[in-house]
Length: 290
Image (cartoon, rainbow, N blue to C red; front, side, top):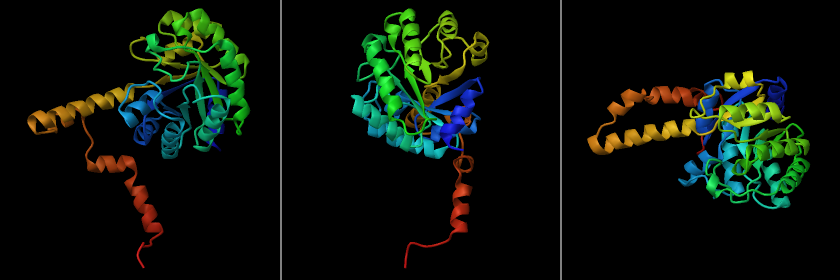
């Protein structure tokens, strides 16, 4: 079964999928090993890991697609990717859809920000296009896909306007054909509103600051996908900062390694699949010399 069909089947079960954000193939494998049924390729994480930069729309479509291809190829579960605002005009958007399809990704979301886009939490920097423009972009993206099972979701950043505007836009985007819609609620009351008033499957983000669990969201009636986009990245960053600080100041690493229960070579090789790689070499032995 293709990964796009796998993802469609998961959504057709009418439950709430939970996933975490990956920024590279290693973090995607960690998410898969933890038991998640899908992986979210985070634009925030890609800009941080590839450029050492904040989420401010500096990556090109080709850079994002190349990293998405590596991530999708490293795991057996379907991946969903952040395609920002589509990377240009109508032709650019259609190419974006097809490139993500060819990369082995099972779906993308596009957003109604003006390019270059900013992290959703940076409200003072965000600008949005009109609802009518975004509806046209959704139809353009749908027209481009070759695989009807490829998910195309639409995100609104109209939190800079009002919750009413977010709900209105999400319903319009769903009516235009988006498979899922993404509002940006921040409180329990707002999550309850979008669950009740948006007539489409939701793709929403959670963070510990919101104080809501996925189980509570299911009880509210939310169906679709909930993603924790940056939590693994933040945890990994802090662990590396602590390890680097100990090494620089004390010339040791064992305190941090013991505290975070760092892997050793054997554990890491077991996780990363060294045995499987060696099995292939043993099954098909050949040399590169004459």
